[in-house]
Length: 590
Ligand SMILES: *[C@@H]1O[C@H](CO)[C@@H](O)[C@H](O)[C@H]1NC(C)=O
Ligand SMILES: *[C@@H]1O[C@H](CO)[C@@H](O)[C@H](O)[C@H]1NC(C)=O
Ligand SMILES: [Zn+2]
Ligand SMILES: [Zn+2]
Image (tube, rainbow, N blue to C red; front, side):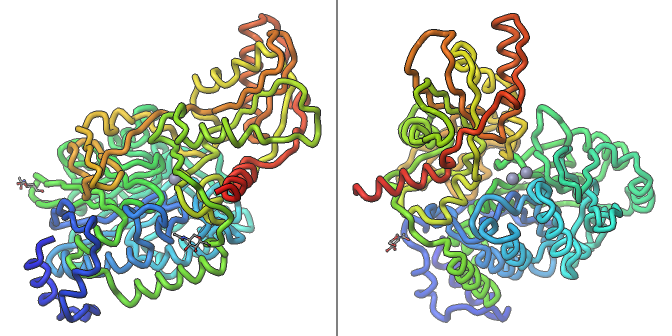
């Protein structure tokens, strides 16, 4: 940040009615030294977008990660000031979200129903386009809440779009989940936008929602009517936003959508916004179409601009903005304060108090990571679980004299465990799922191969985890690592535009593959025909049975079919509880 530049900005924006400190001295004090590093600039174009996705309830900031220290109130302030200072009256800004607003943080998950309060907080942001993710479709009460409070809210009546998800009413009628498309002209440049929103082909929606595969929508009458009503000469930009990855080497859903769209709009500028796989990503589809995906858990605001929209040679630019007060105020070129934003921040604080999310239950002596340390490291959270936590499992249903294999799916852990206070919120963040333990008695020779079998296959069907990031070839490996201890640890994103997407330079966080399952093995005898106890989460029982039956077929050649009748209740505390007790015990000794 250049001081001279800041002064100029202060003078120019006092006319906008924003509440600004009167002296530049006060402004400068807001930036601690480490954060004074200037971010890479946002290249403002004729048409600009800000994008969030997969926020999963993280509206109350990341209290253990200074990179991402902004809350939803700060985000509201940022957009308001950014719009005034950077967009002005001659360019346009469109604000987009692509769903997954539950499951991941106490702010959403500590209420009944889940999302009761966080939905209202989320909806304070003035989205122009928003839609839902698969996490709005697991439970009926979430779907009903999403439909009534957001899709049907007066504020978002125009903005809420879902082209391939429908809602099932109390009477069993199938109705659109919001609008099926949105056509509008931007405020300033009168750019004509036609937008659709697609959910990936999600097959586990509850009975109150219906998902139709995106490609099938192109054959439906309503869709054909819309594209007939808005032919290429009436559309400047097609915006396709939705809950699906923009790089999808396996299912290629978005690529199929693109192929079909290009048949209808061969030359039109198309901008995609995606989500679900929880990464920063940018993909070039052709010279008039790009897509962005903006991370996870409210640590990223994606920025895209398009210049020369109408000239046949659109110029795209992209940036991933860290969800931090520093990044926000530097890009807005003003202090991060609006009345509305700061009121919302205060409101979030008081909700956190009411939900007792700050209540301390223990102290974590050092950080444990999911991806940035290998599973062999003692700073890896799965290593912690298998070596220290799962061995604490005690059965209240059966004897424990047998050898044990305790298998958990890695998708049941959702976040790194950071050094510092272990609070009620930490429980929701790291391992929110309550679980029951089941077990099955099988020969050692079978049990010892189950984990490998499951790790060779696709992500477990029963997992609520996002898909494996199989396109991690796009990860830091292909961009130069940054080794600079003066920088904060974080992303070095590699995408189709190169290595300069992140607004802040980070000390590159490494990424290691995580298997589908991990296990604790306690061997008491070592003859292969010996019966052992194979213990697992009840919700991965079908995956375990499948593995056992396949292994049994190939090993023994015989077809003893294991069924749920062979599985029994093991009892004992959940992983979440065992972890908490372990941390509490550690805290007593330190
Ligand atoms: C496209 O934008 C970049 C900056 O974002 C600029 O350097 C470049 O000159 C632009 N290209 C054209 C053809 O305008
Ligand atoms: C951690 O908890 C202690 C005891 O409740 C409290 O005094 C301290 O402020 C907390 N630290 C942080 C960073 O919240
Ligand atoms: Zn998600
Ligand atoms: Zn998702």
